[in-house]
Image (cartoon, rainbow, N blue to C red; front, side, top):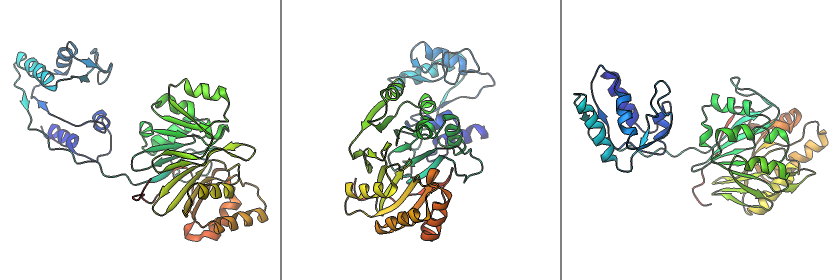
Length: 354
């Protein structure tokens, strides 16, 4: 019974790393009671068959190795379910034991805000695959956002799995622009999790929007700057030959600006963010800056623009270019973040407002 009791003890713990099916269920539910019994016989299927005559179930759940319809049932009245289980056990001459009411699970610890780069052409975590494109997961206290989806879903989902990121954690997808290295992984991701809101630029082709709608997601078209979610804003579509939106996160230490490719110009994007949220300093700019192959004169002007706009930290990746990364590292020193696929960037809290 030692293993059995330790398993029950684990299920009653809060703030544990998900492993079993029940761990994921308990992220949205709680344990209200436990019935246990001691027997050498396998009686799980007998109990499941008795429950299936009375209650709805999730087809195939927990029953892949047997012929039962399911081993997960829903009862509007838990007392009826407990009664059927105890009666079934008694008919089998097994004495059920109703465990004492479980100790209430502690509320989950608040999540630390962070950005995790899950798709990029720059290596960082050698367990992960690189690919031309960009995607990052933005974890905030109450929401998880996937910004862009990289060039293909197989690399995106592989990297998320290696980083132990559950794709069902994502509640919103923000697409910066139409290029395939930023939207190529969307379809494969939505096949895994379509319970999301997709925020995309209004200028994207109707055929692309129709494809997204076919997944039955909630779709919102973005044109003007506005609030997307608590503490999250969009710059709206900015035109740089390619219309593109960037994302702004408010924190207690300033704005975090996430860019896809920065076709409208990364300095212009920062200026627009400061116009949308005036009197805010810029804590961090992260993402692609579309400056590969830029001349030293242009790089100098970009660096000067960042300094004039008061940008505190920088994390250039994707299409920013090796030279811009080298010069910004020299210019920013400890405030330069070496970004690549798998990089986790902690974010300051936002305890003050929306």
